[in-house]
Each structure stands twice: as structure tokens, then as C-alpha cells.
Length: 68
Image 1 (tube, helix red, strand yellow):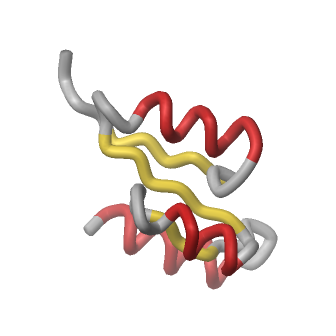
Image 2 (image 1 turned 135 degrees about the horizontal axis):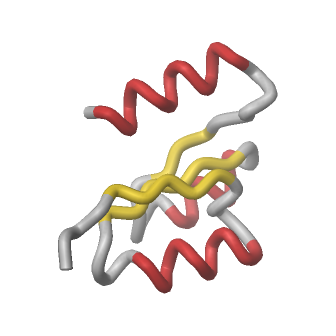
């Protein structure tokens, strides 16, 4: 199976976090969330970035990081 890049918004907690961990073995998973403390914790095991999707400038910056 081809490895895909999967972006999970709200992936630093709850269902999003569970989904990210379940997919990380077979795919490149990148998560974003608004809470810096939660992002810092998950960043040790997955690429994670702070991004409030209600702020266009943060979404643009996150998109650039994902495309790298």
C-alpha cells in the first residue's frame, strides 16, 4: 500500500489524536491544534503544529509546513 500524507486538524486530543496514532504506522501523519501544551506533548511522537484554523495567516503557515 502506498504511504499517504494525512493531515488531522484537531489531532492533539480526543478522537483526532486516536486517529492520528492509529494511522501513523502506515502513513505520514501530521496534526495541528490550538493548544500549545497538547501540541508540545504529541510532537515527541508525531509532527505537530500549532494552528487555529479560524486564523487565515496560521492556516497558510501550516500549509507551507505540510508541503515541505
